[in-house]
Amino acid sequence: MTVTEQEITDYVARVRAALADLPTAQRDELTEDLADHLTEVAAEAEGTLLERLGEPETYAAELRAAAGAAPGGGRNLDQRVATAMARVRGRLRTLDTRLGPPLGYATASDFLHLLRPGWWVLRGYLAAMLVTVISTGGSFGLLPRFGGELLAGMIMLIGFVVASIWIGRRSAQLTRWPRSAVQVGSVVLVIFAFAALMQAEDRMRYGDYGYDQTSVDSQYDRVRDVFVYDSEGRLVENARLFDQNGNPIRLGYPDCSEEVYDKPNLRAYPYCPEQAPFVPRAPGAPLPRGSATSPPDPTSTPDPSGTPGPTGTPPPDGTPTAVPPSGTPTPTPTR
Amino acid sequence: MDTTQLLKGVLDMAVLAVLREEDGYGYDILRRLREAGLEEVGDASVYGTLRRLFAAGLLTTYVVPSESGPHRKYYSLNAAGRDQLTRSGKLWRSFATTMDSLLDDRGMAA
Image 1 (spheres, each protein chain N blue to C red):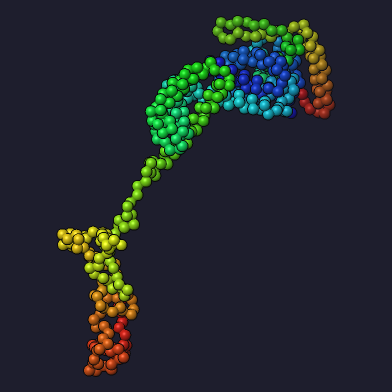
Image 2 (cartoon, helix red, strand yellow; image 1 turned 135 degrees about the vertical axis):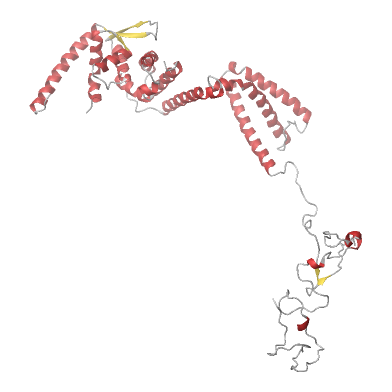
């Protein structure tokens, strides 16, 4: 026989749920033999009841019609909910039986029953952590504290765990309201646990578990050298920097000259003039009129006191040497 | 119109007729109906009909213990059931005759 008692019971329950709108007496009369009848059906043929007879709701509709009962059109919400509940319960029971063997048990719930004491302990811990969060105002670690006190927190933890186990072992004897209260409390603790885990996950992922890592001179810790330019864009060599108290400001570190290492107090900026971001210019050199980045060109340097060349016509500001044929007086910056 | 539609009106009579020859339990009755040619009859219909005929006082039941399988509830025709079968049988024959002649007159072969 491939059909189990449980399957028959579920089927009957769903048929009864689908007939929920009938008067109780009539429904009982219609279905009192149904389980026996289905047992016969199961004994006579192969396959599950669903395969043999179709959905219980369809079966119920056919039964209703054949038995001459009122049609089930006007079912109210309660009955529809009852039908849905019976259906869900049946599906869950099927799932329970299906999931059992892969876990090594007859049903999945057999396996879950074994885990219950573990859940009771965890529940006690979660309750202690909830009190920790409430009493210490939000910030918490992994250990329970009562108002910030670790010892009190540990005592509370032990008390809650023992109480949770006590409640768990007696849950079968609880009456309806205490049982509901325990269930609601458990749901609250599970939600709290998820919220706390999410928060811990966030804190760990962004690496600020409790404190911020800050840099004392974060703005300047990448500075290696300092280049000072005067108002005309010329590089100032051997510059020294001081703060308002006359203390030298030390930035960077020389990496181009070993001499400077020997006399740290004599350091002057820039350490490495050849690494200037803008082309270094000899002090006193005039600014080019074109691009600021053009290299100095001695042949085009204007000389106010220059003498006219032997062949060239002296321009107003004069060039001491080569005079272009076109007579362009200004220096031409090269790019 | 298919057989299912026709069955609705005559299933009572069919069940009573099957029980007339021999008592039977639910699945047994279903099987006998199907063997007799009513192959489209549904399990729930037969079960529901049995419950209704029983509630109407046309059938009696008794349980037969079984060594190999489940205990079986047997249905048996009582006097009221036999009367009912006789009456509805007569009604059906006259109705069937009327329908036959109706169809014959219009040239439909039986």
